[in-house]
Length: 216
Image 1 (cartoon, rainbow, N blue to C red):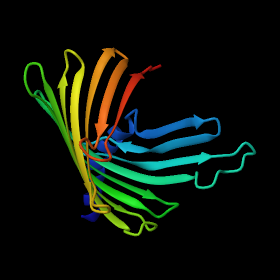
Image 2 (image 1 turned 45 degrees about the horizontal axis):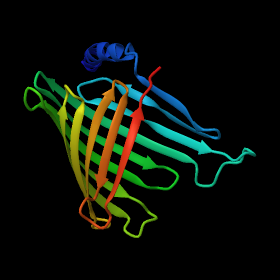
Image 3 (image 1 turned 135 degrees about the vertical axis):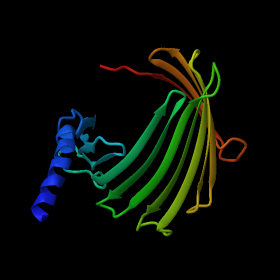
């Protein structure tokens, strides 16, 4: 009876494993040269399913002209993600969990996130996102921290105009942060962005950027 049960389980599981093995994007491999003497690589795997699961590591290193590693430039970050996406004719929603561990410094974080986008009217789309992150850093005086953030974006798809606002709160410092921004598409690959952080406060700061994106 035990052998029969094992055989039934194998015949049930093998088709799904075979289908997963045939996927083209199971492996994650993304090396990059950040500068003349600094490099970074992201490696891992991805399992396509209702809850898409991925895990891997980020490795980075920078060196001097003589080839010696720069102090504190090494990075060895382990990470894992579980994401579920629901798509309907009226919009899309996504829920996810992310874990990251810095193996060199002993810090880590667990983040729960949720986002949603939907059609608000004939000419406007809306996006919302929320996240809660629990972090641990053995070097900080307050080793454990909790940070919550929320953001809203209003998009006019016909003109490429987007207005966004966000806010965040951290129990480690007790600081409340906020931001407002506007983005305008000038050309298909050219965007104009303007943002203001912590408006109406002493830490108010703004920026204007012109971005050009080129894919090849």
